[in-house]
Image (cartoon, rainbow, N blue to C red; front, side):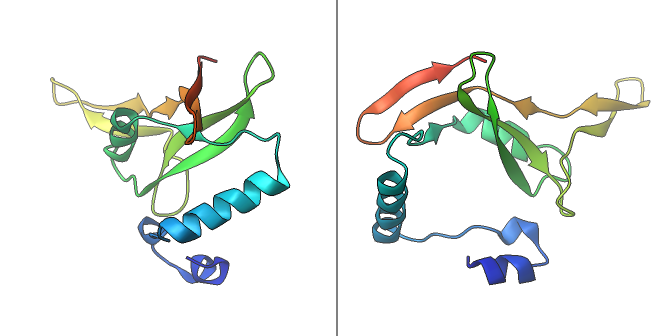
Amino acid sequence: MTQNALLETKNLAEVGENIGLNEGIKLVNAFREANPTATKGYYIGRNILEQIMAQPGCVGINFRKCLTNMNEEHLVYTAVDADGKDILEFSVVTNTGDIARQDAIVADKTIYWDGLNGIIEVLNA
């Protein structure tokens, strides 16, 4: 999705598209050549992604770069609603029929990843 198409979309659930292997390799190589000391990538497991997406109103996931206590680059990720706002809490019906607020998932376990060499380091910030 081009930047202009992204700005025009009204449905955040539509953001993202398959660019194919060749274009993906081209983009990754361009970044690595321009930033040889940068973190090459991250790995996040399916289970936490599905848990985030299953939250009421979630249409996507927001990934934010941050720093660990050890000053290492890291990711924190949250659910996003159709208005582009982070889902930080939502309503649930309790066993007694009451409506209560529940904290949404704010996830933080990430693995540094290099597709050529596999897992580099598990971050436990």
